Image (cartoon, rainbow, N blue to C red; front, side):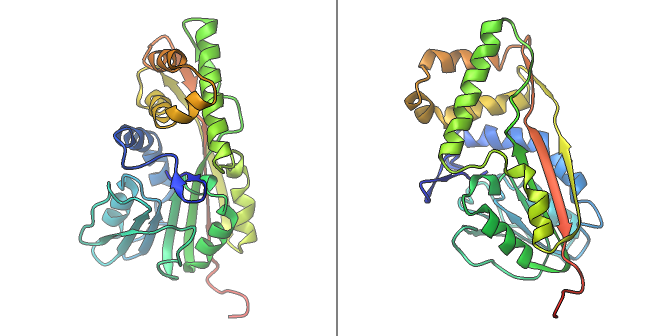
Amino acid sequence: MPTDHDGSEYTFDNGTPDAVPQLRALESFLDPITARRLSPPVLTPGGTCWEVGAGGGSIARGMARAIGPTGRVLATDIDTVHLTAADNLDVRRHDVRTEPLPGDAFDLIHARLVLLHLPERRRVLAALAGGLAPGGWLVVEEFDCTAPLRVLTAPSDDAAKLFAAVTDAMLDVLQGNGADLAWAQDVHAELVGAGLVEVDTITHSQSWPGGSAGASLYETNSRQLEPQLLDAGLSPGQLDGFRRLLRDPAFSVMSYQFVSTRGRRPVAQPHE
């Protein structure tokens, strides 16, 4: 999950120790949703697929299994440390912001939790749409971070306030680094504007109890962002209390709303 920072660095660094539990938590929550969105007719045997910002590679590996030996999957990221090539799975370091597309006839392009972090998101989305083969699908999935996270149960009012204070500060850091917290709400119209058809959107959220993989995502995010959170005025004690709270079974919170939008390039393009 790349995050642009000062145009060249990334807030969430795949090379840090905290990246592994972060990626695993995301996969456990999101992979079942994504798999349903990529099921036929979106993903078919023999297809040519591109996984943008492939992270830990779980979706790219699933694509490779689904398309079979006659298909091809390209998994790209700015840091490929967690990606491994296989028979029909290629891995390439690639920055979608600055480098040309690695092809222009993909049957499926999938980007999850990538574009909301990129100031160039609209230009990149248009380029991805242009990289589709006729009849090909673009699937863009993001968190909508605009609604306050709803605490369902907490051991005390102060605990609930602490959770809100730290998560608000994390979102402020992301926004300061160029993220658009409301981007998920715009994707549907952007796909329509890019000339795609059969555009549809679903949303998903669920409760995350303390100690769950979902709750651990907030903790690993806070560790990745710790220097910036301290610079923003949070104390080490607040961060420690926040992390203890996320392991407390008496605590539960709703996840961010996950928004999955997909559209298909028409088989016959105008003026072709």
